[in-house]
Length: 304
Image (cartoon, rainbow, N blue to C red; front, side, top):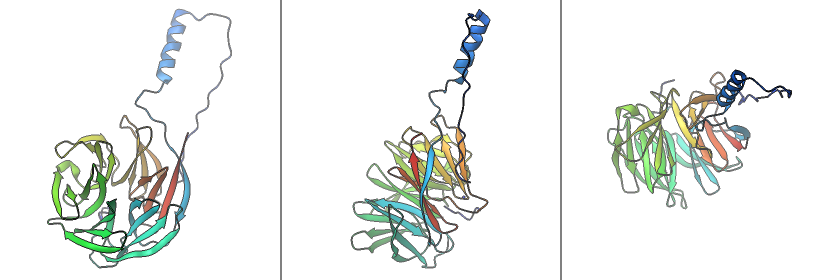
């Protein structure tokens, strides 16, 4: 997500090998040792992961600075900032899309300021809105409550993890636990400068930061472990089936993070520009709002 700091088709190189001709002579001991060393060197380490194969499924158009994604059964919710991310102008809204990219309701909820991260729990849609969050009843489509967050600098992403709802504040390096009744500070750490994306992964909560471009994990409110770094302006996070990750950087990058922490840029549209915002996995698809040029892109994860 933009914090007023300032997102090529996916290219994967195919490897080819040359078949060696058989020889009737037995190799000498030094030759055999060298061959064994080369074979060991060419064997991937257990921590390495193959780069994912992403195939564009669809692109939906007509949005106004789309930033966040949430899903409820077969419906996608997309937040539209429709202006600057730190301006309280009442011009933001939430759209509803099908999983095929069809716009179901362009302006399902209106009158918001700068809506960004969202998550669904128990029939309620939680929406961050710069310095407050909203609780929306999905069935009625009505805002039930709005809670201003004291001292908030730039409320951003929201996720559900271990039956709790968590909200990042990019402006104060904090994460809040929120619900339908209110909120409390849950984790504050200087390493969370520009904290942005939040994604659950079993007993771990994954956290992306913009300042250091780091991917962190935490098992609770007292620990924080860095998995990878160097992805400046990191935004959304997705966990892949092999245990590796995709991380977006909103100015235009999508990164692959191996289980060993190695980062590889696999997509870059910064020059277009096409922003890559709250990258979110939904089934076998990756959904990415593009603040600029006002689109939402769906990628399908294909087996290699």
